[in-house]
Image (tube, rainbow, N blue to C red; front, side):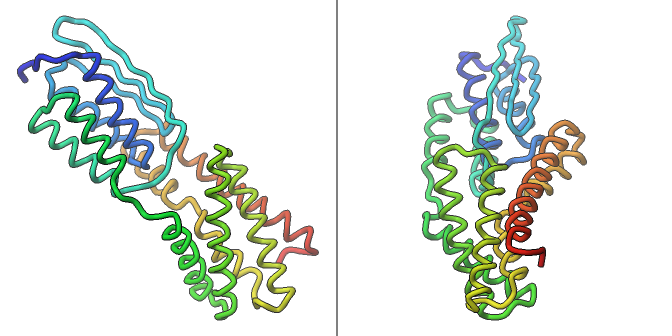
Length: 257
């Protein structure tokens, strides 16, 4: 491929930004590494080495003048937004086909970052609907579904509040699972709900790390053993936090239901 005249430092920063943004929104490791590689090769870089795990990216390029440049990037905040992942995939294809300037790419990245997302109350409502639906799915009564829905809404509000203070994921899940168990026990005791277990399980389905487990398996299949192990351990730690928080409150309440 013919070499494209560009600032390699700026190119490396831009490609790393794309990879960083992909990881922040829950993309698989192979997708992150391949996206960075395709962008850099499209601009005529001689050789590219990319190493990524869910919390870290290292990118090294070798130019046709045998000069080497490296970028290291730490990913501190991660979530799941496959709409943004899809938009970034489309941007990567566009970059490889049209080779726009770095400024144009950064402008498009900015537009993706500022693209319309679900509002705060829409997300709170979604948590409530998920919890209420699972309460009915697991055989709970209508009263259980109502309590689970309210508990799910409270859960999202508390999670959002704790995330503002950059609380670690383990403590967030530990605290909120304990809160959910307390709400379930108190509402059943007050005869507002019928089944403690159904309310707890239905509400905590909002926190179950299903996406993390799925991505861990996909990383293992793709040969990214370290990344898969990291994601699997992260999922297990979340599950452990949920179990510890719920179990502690149930034990203090007089026994496990």
